[in-house]
Length: 387
Image 1 (cartoon, rainbow, N blue to C red):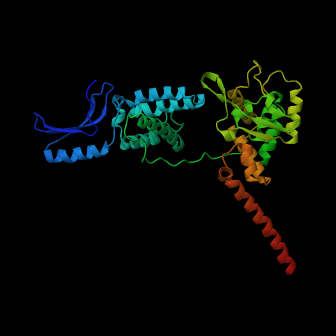
Image 2: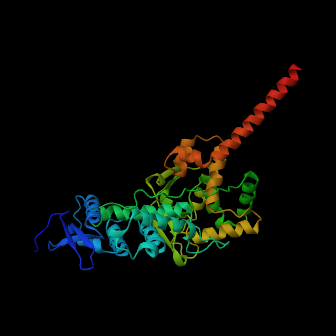
Image 3: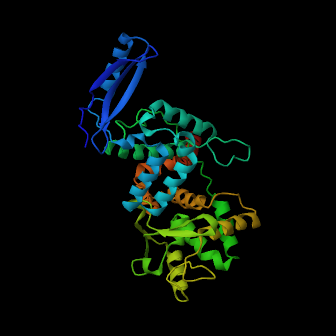
């Protein structure tokens, strides 16, 4: 094994081409030999300044020879570590997507130890302006701010582990400026449209119960598709949300846990939904409340539920909203009825009531406007009586 030289130890020499070269020890290989970082200058004075800055930058560093890896090579290794730590399958799939589509094409070939905060900031800017893999209908390739932030979260986590394993000295994602997140507009059914939708699904007996369950509980599509009869408690008039069925490529799906701890919850059922489930259970042929029509041992595919929802909207002349807007429909109707925000937050599986209030602020604003109209009308009547 070679003799270990202390980190920061420097050497200076004048090269044959007349330039001055300085280098310091920034780490060691497995055999103990030093890993160097070099700088070049035209004069010895300029080199001294650069070398002092280099020593300050790598102060206390003792990197391994893995610092020679490219970012792509490190991300491959990091993903293996994440899989070994039993990260959620959906999390792993999302990480791979962000790495493949948005990180590797821009910085994958660069040595991880040479990547700077400036490099990453330029990548985020480019992603925001033209990072979409598939252009929008108008040809734009602009990436949503939320997606750029998700890419940042993945890269930040990977770089943090690189720091802990002495591959880099500091995390270059720290100090970057991220784009703002513009929430997607919600388009719930109004009362008239909801009545029309409820009437429409009466003509779709195979699908009626799933959609009725959705608009009366506000479950996510992945959650309603993942319900089992073991989750249903008729005595307590409730249903437990404890798993998800999420879409996958090629028409497949995955069964997993709820995304967060808040996602695991018990929802009290309205009487009509309770009775609907009691009746449905009498003829159940599967452990799933909403089984696949052809393979009842499997749950209904979220792709199928989405496609059917869209066909109903088109068939009955309803607005072309997202499936997720059925959840928003439930929430806005609940707000209008005056439900306590904390209770609604628990039903929806939100982290806290403040998020719920922010998400449906437009509804409370509408309620305030209606209240002011009522109060204004009362005052007008009073003034007329006084006159």
